[in-house]
Length: 188
Length: 181
Image (cartoon, rainbow over all chains, first blue to last red; front, side, top):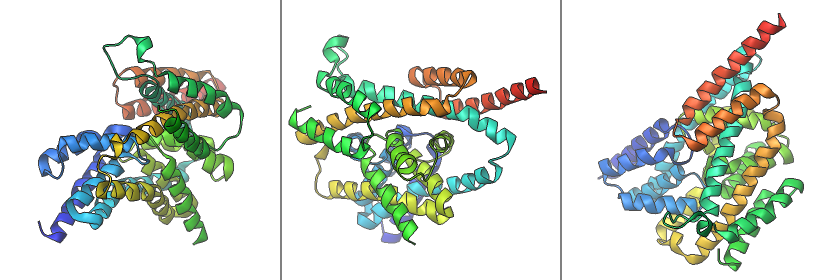
């Protein structure tokens, strides 16, 4: 494909993915899978690898995937086009919503809606935490019983961190760095 | 201009430290934006998360845009998003270009197992801290518990849960007003 057309297609495909995936985490996954089948830009295996890479690098998976696919299809510029395209719908929609929110902040109905949203938002954060706890403290080996699946090193580290992070003011960024080093030193 | 640059740098910093998706970002946002700089209230962060969850797009980007728009309008939203995306862009380019089996390197796996344990604890402590401000009374607990159970143990679409809790908020408000009269 010639240069400009591939950029336009990347832009279109990733803009659409950004627009259609509602909700966090792996919400982009079904759309990326569909894209793999339609465009042939990447295989399902590459998508699975990319999920693994996304889990071990910072950044949302949709963004990571856009950069990766864009680069493999059309180099660095392709990566930039795909990444900006997947983020663009969010920016446009939220810019509008945030204007509306600022204008109607004092409205009684908006206030009541927000009153309902806050505990729900915290509940979703808690349930994402539970899911992450399951992933990080238990090994995926369905044939074993519960106790043999427990990843004791991670459990001990978490138990050690909990009081420190609860009752002391520590910078989460520094804690992440320390835990990465602990992970390497103790071969987690 | 300086403030836009600051916005970019703060979100790039947040972007570097966000392992494991939009929700893992909550503790770092809370620390960097609310606690350290006083740029936003914790409850505002929760509002943005809830709305982001029900809106199209990537949650981390949505929240970055919300915050940027609040500080510096649309340009701020764009700059915060670019800052947020920049680190992962560079890292993934490097991986795509040179490190093909990055995720299979044993040290990388070990480091991330350690980081994951830390992220779990960070989320737990953040939930405990935000509990006081966002789950202040009984009706709020009555929203928290079913939403937590449904999102943790069933496959109900999260956007639907957010819409339902908004409706519940309006209903609770109406009941309160009825009582007040």
